[in-house]
Image (cartoon, helix red, strand yellow):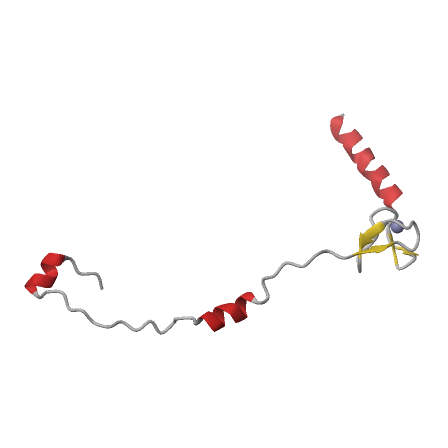
Length: 89
Ligand SMILES: [Zn+2]
């Protein structure tokens, strides 16, 4: 409770010790923030084209994962080019 000087002199202001029940300790804050750290992205070499890609992700250079072709990137690029060409008309 915030009391101004006039209220204190006249005795209107009732100063009471307020207890904040939802107070989080430094320990609780630290525990919560222990998962907030950033981590560096790890790269690994593609088995097919030897390019660097994020580990446990598809290689965006050749579209393969673990030596197996997953997506056909050439077809995807061609499809996108076709779509752009039709939109411009
Ligand atoms: Zn690759």
